[in-house]
Length: 157
Image (cartoon, rainbow, N blue to C red; front, side):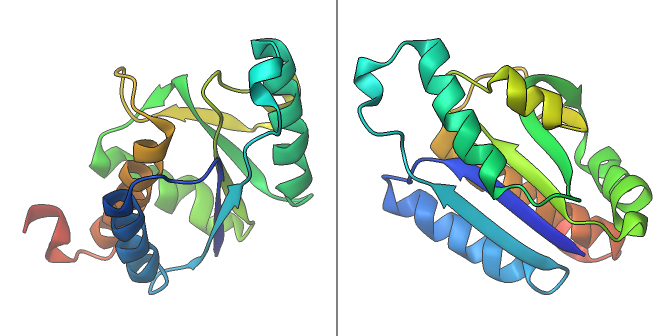
C-alpha cells in the first residue's frame, strides 16, 4: 500500500523535523510512505485568503495522483480514536490497494476544488494545531494505527 502525506510549507522547528523523520522511518516497515512538502506560495502576503487557498489548491491538486483516494485533514472531518482509526485503515483503505493521499492544507484551509477532489475528511482534534505540528501528530497516529493492526505493543507501551 502506498500512503502519501501532502503538506503545505516547510517545518521551521528542528524538534518537529526530528519527530517527523523518526516516524517516517518507522512507517516504512508497514507501507510505502511518501511525505510531500509543498513550497509556500510566493508573495502570499499580497493575496487575500481566498486567493491564497486557490493557489495552494492548484499546487496540491497537481501532486495528487489520478487514482488516489484523497483524505483531507480538516477540522470539520470525522474524529477517530487511535483504535477506530486503525480499524478505518484496515477496513476501508488497506483492502483497496489504492494509493491513499492524506492532505494538510495551509493556514486558511482548502480551496473548494480540493474539497471537491476529496473522498473524505478526518479531524485529529476539535482543537487547532499549527500546520507544522499536525504533520508530526498525524504521522505518529498513522504509525500507531499500523502497530494496533499488527498487535504490537507500541500503543500501550
